[in-house]
Length: 249
Image (tube, rainbow, N blue to C red; front, side, top):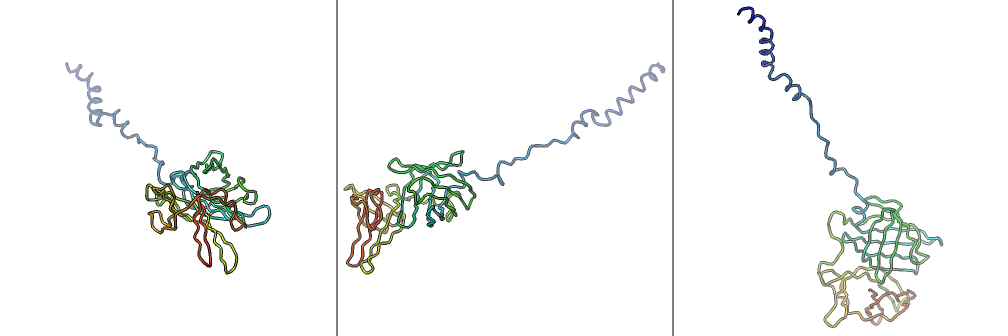
């Protein structure tokens, strides 16, 4: 009997020691550190071009004739906007019904009346854009260096109308002074609303306040040296000493 106990004693001691160390093999696994891949999907991620584009952009460029041209571009978060370009007596005001950024850095802009522009973005940041416009009239074709003056990427005011039945109306305004005999022009953003009689009323504000007047169909091809045949409607504000014409589509 004693011989049997002495013979088994080493095995018993080994079993007791192993139990005292709390399941030897299992502890080794718990001591091994475990790491999870950090989540970098938010925070410092670089914004995409689609996120940086919405806003109002303004800047200038120099065409082949050495003249300074001005470009004002409004890109709303809903994919609409306006484009205004001017150079000396050349001036265009267009409404963008749909725009999209393409992978080859082209900015596809579909306009009213089945027109389209497709400028290329040479450089884009959250506050600056270098845009090469080689569509449209020759004297407006150049590279424009634009700065963002209003940012719509954060979901703020998108420049669109606050009333469902009032639409944004990019407007070419031509003024004439009888005293000087000169014509001047500017690009303005006004708002139009269709009346029950089928005519548009032009307003200064998106909530339907600041009425300018009721427009009629435009039959003019030029006015004051400016080409206006591309506009469907005109409102004439004529006084004894001056006149102001509002052209829009």
